[in-house]
Structure formats: C-alpha cells, structure tokens
Amino acid sequence: MFAAQIRFAPRRVLSGQMAPMAMVVAVVAIFVLYPIYYLVQASLDVGDSSVRPPTAYGFDNFAAMSDYWGIMLNTLSVTFMATAVALFFGFLIAWILTRTNVPFRRTLEQMMVVPYYVTPLLGALAWNLLGAPESGFINQLWRSMGGQGALININSAVGIAWVMALFEGSVAFVMIGAVMKSMDPSLEEASQIIGAGRLRTMLKVTLPLVAPGVLGATIFVFAEMLGSFSAALVLGTPSRFYVITTAIYQFVLQYPPRTPLAAAMGVSLFAAMFLMLTLYRRIIANRSYVTVSGKAFRPRIMDVGWLRWALFAICMAYVFLSVILPVATLVYASVQKLAVAFPKIDNFTLENYRTAFSLNAVRSALWNSLLLGLLTATIGVAITGLLSWIIQRSNMPGRGALEYIVMFPQAVPRLVFAFGMMWAWLVFPIPIYGTFWILLIAYLTVFLPLGVRTISSVIVQLDKSLDECGQVSGASWSYRMRTITAPLLRPGILAAWLLMFVASVRELGASILLMGPNSKVMTPAIVEAFFSSSSELTAAMALIQTVVVGVVMVVFTLITRRASQYGGA
Image 1 (cartoon, rainbow, N blue to C red):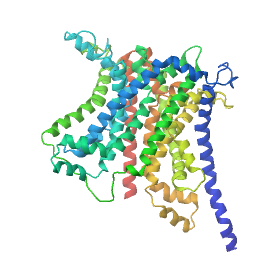
Image 2 (image 1 turned 120 degrees about the vertical axis):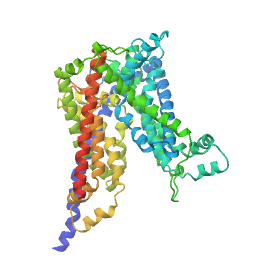
Image 3 (image 1 turned 180 degrees about the horizontal axis):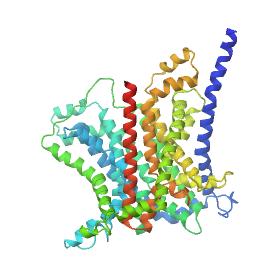
Image 4 (image 1 turned 90 degrees about the vertical axis):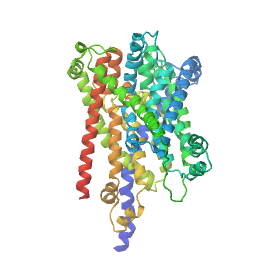
C-alpha cells in the first residue's frame, strides 16, 4: 500500500499543478497571440478590405507606406528629440540625487516619480492651455507685454517632444538612478584625488561607468516614445501634425476606413519596438557590462558647497514643470467660465464641475473606469501571479517561450494592439466587441507585462527551500501556494494590484478603439470633451479622474498598511 502511494503521488501532484498551468497558458495564448495574428493578416490584405477573411494577400500595404514618409519623419524627429531631453533630465537628476549633498535629497527622490503617475494626457491638456499659439496663457502674457506672435508653440514637433520628455524623464531617472546607486564610487573618488573637477569627473568617469545603464534606458525610453499616443493626439491633431500612432487612429476613423494600411503601419511599429526591446533585454542581461563588484561599498556623497542650492533648484524646476504647473493650470482652468490669462473675480465658477457630474455619460464613464480598474487589478494579479510562478519556479517545458509571449504587449503600442483585437473579436463567435467585456480582456492583456515584472521581482528573492520544506512535509501544491508562497508574495501582489488599477483607470490607447456606446470609460471621454467641448470642462473632468484615483490609492495604502501592522502584531 505504501508503495502504491509513492507510485501515484507524483501523478496527483503533476495533475494538481498542470491543470491551472494549462488554463493560464491557454488564456495567455488567446489573449496575446490571437489579436497579433489578425493584425498581421490585415496588414497583408490587398483584396476587398470589407471582406473577411482576406481574398488576396501581398505586401502592397507596406509599399504604400512610402507615400507617408512625412509621418515617418515626424515620428522619428519627435521620438529622437523627446528621448534626448528625457535622458538629459533623467541622467542629470539621477546624478544630483545619488552623488551630491543636495538639500532634501530623499524628499526630492520621492517627488521625481510623481510625473509618471500624472500621465502624459493630463500634462498634454495642461500644456495645451499654457502654450497653444493663439490661446495659450504664456503667449497671451507675452503679447500683453508687447511681444509679437507666439513665444512658444506647444502644437509643434518641439512642443510635443517637450511634453513627452517631461513625463518620460521620470522613467529615465528611475532606471539610471538605480544603476548609479549600485555603482562602486571608488573610481570617482580616485579621479577627484588626482585633481579632476566635479564636472570632469562626471563626464569622464561617472558617465562611462553608467553607459550600459544609460544605453538600456535610451532604448527603453525610445521605444516608449515611438509608441506614444496621448500627447501626440492632443497636441498634434489641432495643427494636423501626425505621428504613426495618431495616423493609424485617423486611418481607422475615416470613411472608408483604410484598415489594411493602418495595420501595415502597426506591424512596422511593432517590429521596430520589438527589435529595440529585445536589444534592451539582451543588454541588461549581458553580465560583461556589470559594474557592481562583490566588494562591499557605500555610495559616498560629494559636498558640492554652495552649488547644492543650484542643483536643488534644477530638481525643483523639473517638478514644477512636470507636476505643479500642469496641475495648477488645470485647477485654474476648471474654475473659469472662460479660461483667460488674467484672473477676474466674476469669471470664477464651479459650473464646470456641476456640469461634469450632471452628465450621465461622464458618471457612467467614471463608474466603468473604476469597475474595470478593480476587475483588471484583481483578476490580473491572479493570472500574472500564477504566470510569474510558472516562469520563475516551475520546470514546465517552454516556460522561456511563455515569458517572451507574455512580454509581447510591452513591445506593441496599446493602440496597435487594440487594432488587432478589434479585428480578432469582430469575428469571434461570442459577440463581445463594443462591450464592457472586451475592454476587460484588452486591459488584462496589455497589462500582463506590468503584473509579471512586478511579481517576478519578488519571487526571485524567495528561497526555494521554503516551498521544498512544505513539499517534504507532504503539503499539496495548492496548499503550499496558499499558505507559503502567496503570503510571502504579498508585497509584490499589493504593488502589482495598485499599479494595474492606476494604469487601467487611465488607459487610453486600447480604450479609444474598443469602447462602445454603452461601455465608455473616463480617459477617452476626456479626450472627446477636449475635441468637442470646452477646455474648462475638460480640465474639470481630468481633475475629477485624478482626484478619484488619488483617493482610491490613499484608501488602498491605508488598508494595506493597517493589515500589515495587524499581521505583524
């Protein structure tokens, strides 16, 4: 009897693990590969585009892209400028906060990540109020002081790149700052001992040492800029300045739709971004670039004297331009009957907020956004948690390929991915296109990499022996997952839940193509209001969304902190 137990136990364990694994892998394959297949198929369609499946295949759509070289040039010019400025901000601020004795260093470090949560859409709306050539506050003030024309033009390529760079600069800061913190400062100290100045040491020693990290950040930020949508849509469309993502959106909306050409542009963008992100992954995985030695060290902070207040001013200027000024601009515009440069007492009103809350479309969009955020975060954490465990801890064949498939949505702009989903779910036997459910599927798909990266970073820190002890004691796989692995993963799970919730509530690229009349969500509703209504109402709606998300984040943080204290006690 004992021998029989030994013989059959592995089979029970295997079946207990394989059932949920197989289910998750099947869901991922359907979510990720199914839309990409239809995106590629549409790009090769050279027959009647209204007939599905295609009646003829070819590469004519890719050849036709040469007629839109201006859009390609716009995309590359904006992407290069935005990447260069974002990296300048990221590197300079990372160096200041990790290598100098700038005042309030820890507070500034926490403030630097705030632009990432503010999002480019809110920044684009605010900077459009500030820098539009005719109506922008800055240009109105300029003309009132005797200036001619427009001092700045935020609707130009430079203006769009500026806004994109402000909000991606915080991403570059996080990536480069992490490299600087883990770098042995002995070479910098040696440089200063032999008489090199601070600037020369930064350029000749620090920069070469962090070059691999900067290169990785460059590729990542460049790929992000290449697929950027919201800032280019809000700032570029009024002046008919298009990049690839906004051109794809216009091709889909126009009548008749030019979907095969839009799909060809999407596939080209996907190929370029996938190549760059693959290169990025290879760079960060190459151990020959490692700058961290086994020797213990503590980063030494340089005393820069009076210069520390100048460096403090640089950091505060970045926070002011990316957070304080945009939010203050939207607050001011939202309480104006007509947004003008000079405040007048009789121009103040709360009518924009009353109007926003009175619109059924806005209330339903806000409710849909919150519900989608809660469902995406909750279901997404369950799926990505299991995926992370499969990728990091299981011996399942093909788990390396599964990791690559899970990361596919990161290499595709959400607008392009939504374009593939639109075709895929139109022909799906269950009619869910234009409903709440396709948005939920889209969110779960595009945020797979976010959840997997967050939870995987915690899993790799857990000692495998904890799970093995439970296995030796006779605990089943599901029991070990509930009682050992899941409790230890709680910090990563909570972080993933919060990140996926915030990202879902503010999602634009996928939502704007997939939502239906009865499934509107808040961010596309804000964009619609921007193009069809007043700037004042748009500002009120954007702030309502920001405040609601902020309240949920605060409540969630308080609940989890109290739960942790209770658990710790």
